[in-house]
Amino acid sequence: MYVLGGRFVAAIVTAVVAMGLLVSCTPPAVESVTPGSLDVTVAGGVQPTVEVAALPEAAAAEITGLGQATEFVMGTPMSIELDGELPSGGATLTRTYAQPLPEDVVATFAYWDKDFETWQAVPTSISKDRLTVTADVDHFSIWTDFISGSQQALTTIRDNAAKAGQAVAEWTTGAVNTASEALHWSLGNIFTKRVDLPECELPTPTWVIDLPVGVGVDDPVRFCAGYDKANPDLLVVKARANRGYGFPAVLNVPSAWEYNSTSENSIGKLLEQVGSLDQAVADATYQLLNSGRFVGAGEEISFGIPASALADFKGEYLLEMRLPSVSQVLMSTIAQQLVAWAASKVNGTLAAALAVANCGSSLAGVTDIGSGAGAVLGCLQSADEKIAQMIGLALLANGMQENAAGKLAGQLVGKISVALALLPAAINTIDYIAEMALPQNARSLTISAAEVTAPDPDEPWLITAEGVGPIRLAHIEEDFALVRERRYLCSGADVAWAVAGGADGNIGGGERGPWIQISAASEVSGDVPAPRTESGITIGTTLSELKAAGFYSNVDSEFWWSSVDGVVLTAYVANTSGGAEPQVTSLVLGSESLGAYDCG
Image 1 (cartoon, rainbow, N blue to C red):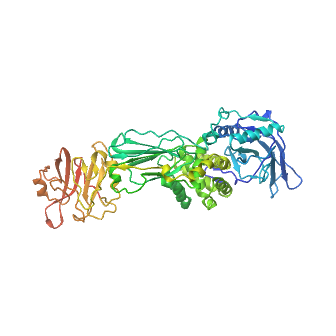
Image 2 (spheres, rainbow, N blue to C red; image 1 turned 180 degrees about the horizontal axis):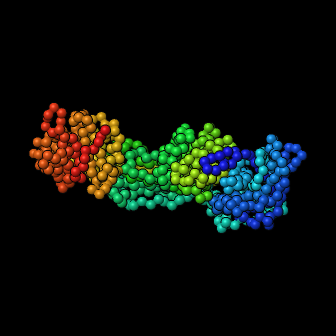
Image 3 (cartoon, rainbow, N blue to C red; image 1 turned 60 degrees about the horizontal axis):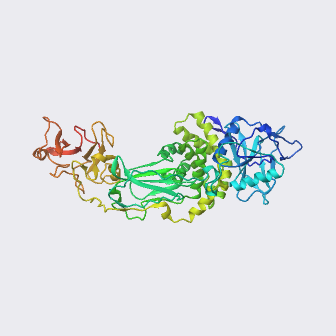
């Protein structure tokens, strides 16, 4: 199978390897270990050879990377080869442990994919007595088993192996021997996550009466509130996910700006490329990511909120970090693991989201994390190529070259399989069970604010030195965003005037400074009067009225100028049909000699 610039590995198959030597989370020299029993059964007379594998450097490095992220016990990697073709029925691999595996651990088996230089984990079954793992395999290569769980459970497994006479060696990473403070904080801080408070500039704006923010170190979400240094009238709220999974954010008022560190506000653009392959999956991925407002494990979302945004606010919560679905827990936990394995946040988030979204039907009715992880891992068997293609397209859209994108896509699919296989024993499962019992107010912000009166939509806006109605020259970007959906714009305007803002064609500033323009959209009439100065200058003002108000111009110029308390106001005058006196069709506050804004 092929994906983008490189060959994609054959579909993931179920496999289990049986080994005698257990190696705790730190690599010994391979030649110093002695393999134990390995049972490989193949139909027919020819049986495979099973030897201790000479691990490639890349394979050992991948194990080291996993050991830096989470604790595990693994078997000695074994090379399994067969002289001839593997029968159509495949082979059965069986591994028997010295003592039953503890109930709180999972075991998965993985093979080394030499093409993409990654370990590929596969669905693995454990016997009822938890002594044996077994799987049917359709190919041979280098295989090993990974066991993940609490530090106590893994210690028990290692002790039992030593008592049974098996050699046990440590895979030195420098992090493995660090004692875990508690179950909630164990596993290398990868499958769980605790973070510091986000940082806000204090205090909050004066219009905020009360905005209580908790400071509990184990709160599921950690909040802060303050002001925007660039615009002190803006309230800034930040929320940081304090778990090994993420949360969908819901802001119940309009914002002037927002930023999500999880996706760096780029998810929509990257998914456009994926939509060329499967729009339904791209849409499902966008929904899974809460339309770009999903906050990943340990990540942060922030909003700038003006006082006017609360004019019509009647809700209970200003900002809610809602309980994630099973799919979202899986997606965000996998993404965190991929980032720990050196993927960028955007690439890791997209890869995890695309994998889970592709397997949405497999998650129907699933209510627990362990079953969900198994369902998605099984789904990868049939959808690996498609998922890799979509990940590769997203990587291309993010600026990666074709061959590099193809190889990384294959590696990410392999790493996703390992994360899914180890996830059921991770602390997230316990966190999530506790999370479901928490009320929404444990993950939300409430606010009390000074009363804000919304502008009367039937009253004209006033043109002053500060701006036009609610749009201030000094804060064009955030103010303009708040009225963008109103009828005072060319797009969707239902009256005969529209307003635009910017500088040299761009909202927010420029060499000539910010400006706001009001223009006639078609004819000078409408249900709501256009913005006007205190003296009554507006769209439709005649030339003689303009002159009487003190506007001046060059001879025969279409542009006329005046000042509103020191701020330039430019009027554009055009002839009217039927020979009537010329009238004002456009007003520009804040910059001279601008052409008429096209409202077409």
